[in-house]
Image (cartoon, rainbow, N blue to C red; front, side, top):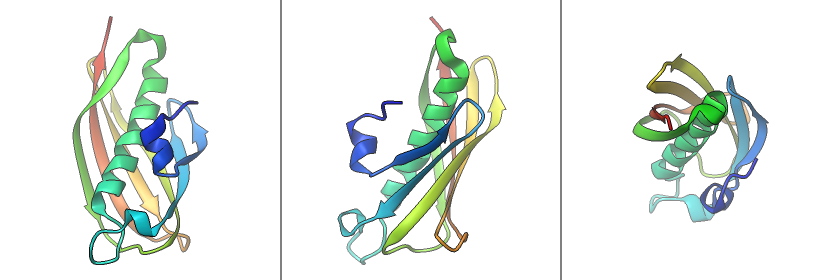
Length: 124
């Protein structure tokens, strides 16, 4: 699956991807840090939206396209380096909208961030 240049710049590597779950791993680099030397929250938000959008698109398939309309991401543990794993799963899949939950864990299986994305199904 083609992720596009923005997701590629985040270093996302898809491990699984279908309409029921999307998992990916990625590595925190200094270029992703905010001024205090920890991973910028916007990177988490970007990963959350990317994985939710992939899963929602795969589920909707040829019935249309999806666009994110809301992204709420909470941060639980600061990261400065290392590999993170993010998993997206649907909470709701309806005719007009979907809601996906994305959880990011560090290499010790501790929750680093958790986000929820609401997506609009655009039907042709």
